[in-house]
Amino acid sequence: DHRSKLIEEKKEIQLKEADLASKEKLLMESLSTLEMKQLEWEQWRRQEEINWHEKLRENEAATRKSIEENMCKVEKERLASLEKSHMEYEKLEARLQKSLLEVETKE
Image 1 (tube, helix red, strand yellow):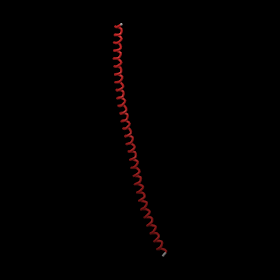
Image 2 (image 1 turned 90 degrees about the vertical axis):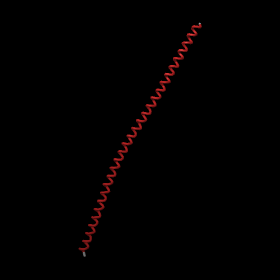
Image 3 (image 1 turned 90 degrees about the horizontal axis):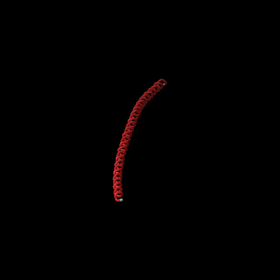
Image 4 (image 1 turned 120 degrees about the horizontal axis):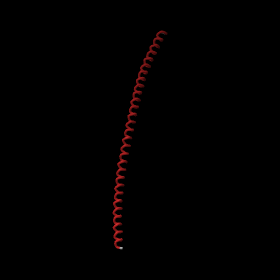
């Protein structure tokens, strides 16, 4: 009776050890899967960060180009206005000279 009880306890221990080994194997597989998922996530995050920086550089370049184009347009308009003013000044100066000559010849 005592011997059969020991044999039964030994079988229970072996079953528990087998169950624990099975659970340990599942746990290790889960950890491995978790580690893989973590690595995949880190790679995804790095790629997203690279993409974000690239998009930022593209946006900055587009903004710079737009500002430069706008400044060129404004500068051309300013130069055209300056040229127009200069031409008007020369016309007025010529009229003034003509008027002065007329006045001088009348005197």
